[in-house]
Picture (cartoon, rainbow, N blue to C red):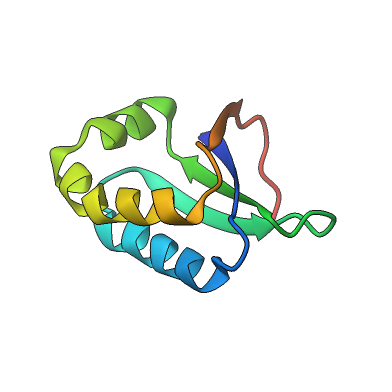
Amino acid sequence: MWAQLISARVKDGSEVELEKVYQQVRDAEQPDSGLLRTLVMRDQNDPSMVMTLVVFESEEHARAREADPRRAEGLAGARESMAAVFDGPPSFTNLEVLQEYT
């Protein structure tokens, strides 16, 4: 497995639009992308900071998903929404999953 942590700061008053962004991203997802799970989280000490953890079967699946033209078409509207909601570009942390517990 492979994961990526995406961190972004939300502009003041954009909480309602934030849900729209996440719905647009979900709508663009393709069933064969290799995505296993997504967790969307908010920092308790800094509510303007949101983090999304996406977990994939492998890094290869994640990179193929990034290049998938079907997904790119679906994300066009989401990118516009992201520009309105996020205060600057997100940061990305690539993670090798060593173990998983449930």
